[in-house]
Length: 351
Image (cartoon, rainbow, N blue to C red; front, side, top):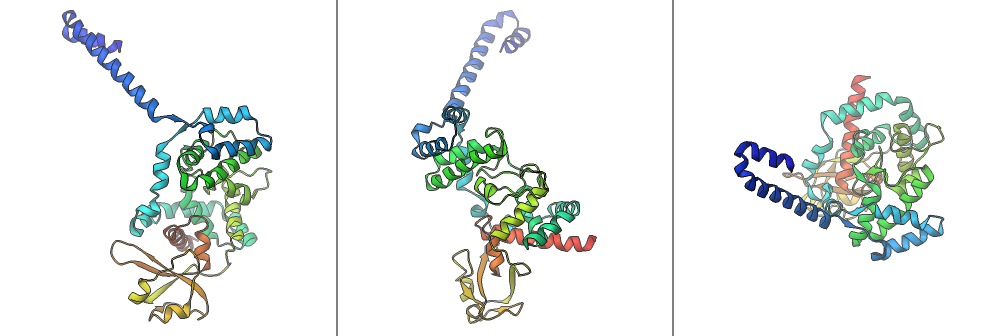
């Protein structure tokens, strides 16, 4: 502020000092107003105001967590409306397939996938053998989730989860479970809860595992007596493969099958749930023809994605719905599948 006064005196002379002083007071008033607005938007998260947080604290204290430490953690974070906004408008619900696909299926992401695969060929091959999951799917998941570790999130995970528990009633119970698991994870792994960064939904590391998935499926794949998905791509490779194995990935089986043609009847009745809910015979009885011959009694689903012009329609197999266990979105599963196929084809060319 004093620099503003000095500058005014130099430019207008000492006789204008009065006006310069008025300018200083104006600037100071604006600074106070800005500070006030920031304090209003930065709302503290009070445990006692939210039953879910109180219950969570009680459960954690029963497991040996210190009350004062929990109070310290909550005192260090604030409610972030931006987290709630992001949760209510995810890309999977606000974009068409054409635009969503463009986020992931592009030359630089494919090249990054080739580089990652070449760097970790042995580890990917071992994970595929140990867990029965295709190498290209492991690679594609890491590519979609974090650009192969280049972007692992910018939000404080503790703050994000506390915000979601306190300000997102529809799923507050779910996020309370994630917050509990996150604090347990930090205790187990020696992480500082206030230092861990991740997504707005509390996912962390190369594979963007939420805390419950980290604790359930993460493995020490490089045998260094640590399970580090935040910084270690090798542990990530094994952990992603283990995740898919636990969700019953079927080795050597397809993800999607293309249509040669289909009818309006089929287009008007895509699968409503994320599972295989009809047979191939049911689909072909609508007049549809498939590119590949499939057993008539095989259980599959039908996926129709909005692509701005003509929809993208595919037969979805069991493995397609396994991908949706990672993110419950058909667009997400299709993006992972298509990226996996693009990277696999590119790898065949460079080998």
